[in-house]
Length: 382
Image (cartoon, rainbow, N blue to C red; front, side, top):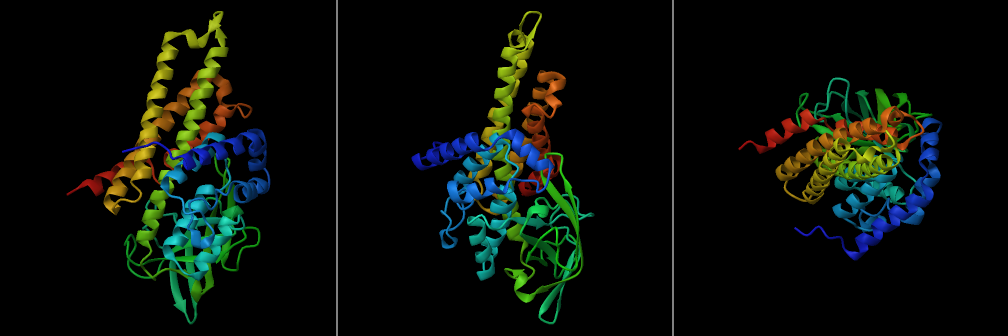
């Protein structure tokens, strides 16, 4: 398999990297993350109007550029390298993926707004009793005349406090944990002034992002809030979440490249016993081990990205194998980077601590190592 980027893909990588180097200051982004509104709207507008990355992988019918999985990998890795907190994966990968696969005029209208930088989405999928299993859905949606009525609760809805739209999974038929009978619903949303029937509990996550727990109590939605075919949303959810896992795998690679480079540079400057600590063989060996883990993570990210177009079983195996590899590398590189920096590795002033928190979050995002080992085993059985 040829992993060489085309000239256009190289230009994309250089453009994103150059923009972030010149515009995305880590200190400013952390300050914005810790205060209202929790992100930088001007940066998001720049992503849409100057870089065009919000539409780079979206279809041309909604004014996107029609790029594919490799373009997604390039963008996500550079965003990870700069530790961007703006909701690219939640909006461009998860939200847009669900909308594009569901189809319909309303979905296309929101996709066009995403490309223009005017819409941001959050996916309400996990529930208090579901663990990491997204098809364990007890939230219900029932018809009431020309409307839908939704009752239930969702947790860890990342980006909900800054979203303009929610996509909600709810059961319209079947039993708990059935993959059949799950439907998707789209609604306009403002966390500060939520629609009647939604209670919002916002919070900031350990990696300086925003999330919320949502409670639905007789939430009434119009008939056209339903996305796609009633009760047939699971395949759409499964494929879209695999896209997101591949994207955060690439993001993690970007984070780990930065963490390793900063650690090597620090080891050349920090002195102990009158010599740089990088001259100690035991620490050289440790950094070589970190480099090996990074190379394995890069290969895993490529595996996930290049398997997204495969049949569902192959895609699931490849993505889960990649997630396990990425999680192991993220923990090893992140923890060792902090240890090699000493106590200052966890301070707010040093970038390493912020990258470590994001890598820790990625380790469990969209399923832990144990979850994906079990998923891999299930999809491998004859």
